[in-house]
Amino acid sequence: MLVGPLPTPGVAYLTRAMRLDAGIVISASHNPYYDNGIKFFGPDGYKLPDQMEQEIESLVLDGTFPSRKPEGDQIGKAYRLEDASGRYIEFVKSTIPRGSNLEGLKVVVDCANGSAYKITPELLSELGAEVHTINDHPDGININHCCGSTDLTSLKEEVLRLGAHVGVAHDGDADRTLFIDESGRVVDGDQIMAAMAVELKKRNALSGDTLVATVMSNLGMEHYLNRKGISVLRTKVGDRYVVEKMLEGGYTLGGEQSGHIVFLDYNSTGDGPITALQVLYLLKKKSITLSDLVSDIFLYPQVLENVKVKKKGVIRHEAVRRGIKDAEEELGTEGRLLVRPSGTEPLIRIMAEGKDREKIEAVTKRLARLIRKTEKEENKA
Image 1: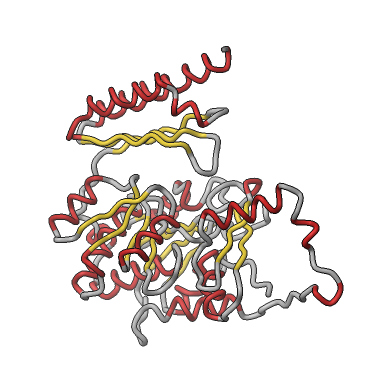
Image 2: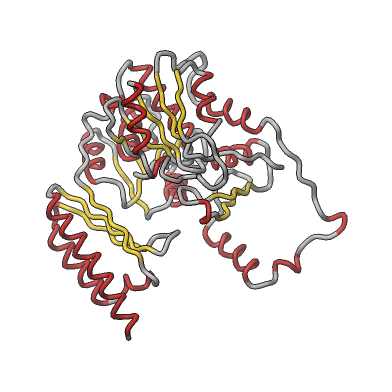
């Protein structure tokens, strides 16, 4: 059954709702078009476990997969589901109370030239918002190019130019959403998760009074939620691991700083349109601005640096490990350090956070130099 172009969470929803055997998405997520990969969803709408994906990959790469191709009457047929977008839009609408609307809100949507280029604008317009769109003309090449949740420059400019209440930015496959407030400030996934966690707790809808986040989420967010009586559980980076922890503990809200927000009462994966709607509905319901919503959430300075490498194994080198240990001791209890290989790119990602920006910037730069130097020496050896 062919449904595209459709956001990744739309495929997850339809796979589950239509009782299909599997869902398959071809997507580069937030990356350039040439990084396209394949995402699999099981019949329950959840991403397949790592081990199962590795088995599928092995079948393809070891040459045995072609011999398993069906022939003759074993070959199925592909049908296009013409109303796939409409079904998904109606599903997203169902996540707010019937009769609710977004009238009076002026919203700019950056569609990242991706899969939600029609979905989110139609969704919000049908609910009464005044919607302005940018980067909504995908050509298969311009997806995520200087736009969307990875580059908020043009969205910020448009929000300020139009005097909009809020800007909404998806990535290419729309499983992420970040925001720009009315004054042009970025509101990231940590702030949105914190605000939604507090709201859900008030509704008695935050299971276990717990938010599931990743190791990348800001320490300031955790301290804010702790003061509100909400615990934060952390997983390694990746929305699949967030979802696994949520299922394990029966939790209802989780996500990532990057804008993957999972409302497990609604969908089985990060859902950009649902995130956008939940936040906008809350603003309308409370008659507040986005800056009001997150005004009490103080995030610590956080510095991120990506170091290009040929081999990610350099992170295990003794000199690098020693450098990381020294940096952690320098930051002490006033900061936090995370050094990890990227799961999708040839990069080592360094994240340092703490109350002293100068200190964490110095630590980050020193580690980046050490990794580059160590790899260079390894290549010479």
